[in-house]
Length: 157
Image (cartoon, rainbow, N blue to C red):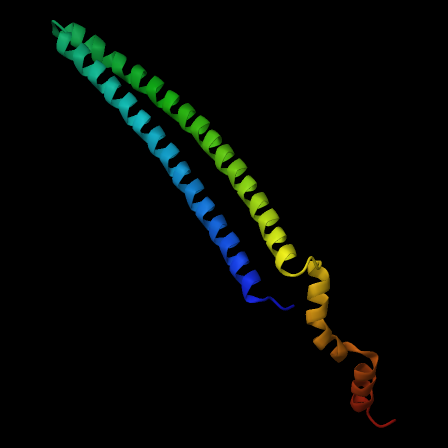
């Protein structure tokens, strides 16, 4: 299979565009995760401020004890919501990245096939590959196989 300089350059550019697209997809995915992390931290900070404010507003020890006992259930609710949100975020981010990656791979395959078709004179890849392998197919010819069989036979017993 012979590639001229133009086809090698075209394929290189197609592959380079594909790698840039994948890098862009990974960057977008990282930004989505950063946003999800920022939202989680903001939610925790808001809950901590709320709990601290309720404790500061307590006028006596009994009310402070009531607020303190309520904090356990609030924290449990917050953690449950956080785990649920993490699962939703994971599914959403995975779905987005997976779909975008599939589109990028599909586009890359089409562009690479078009580049090969243009630069190899619209010859099918299988024919080009077959021409390349012709040099090695003679080794598997029947004459070569019979010559090997004759040399491996031993004298009759």
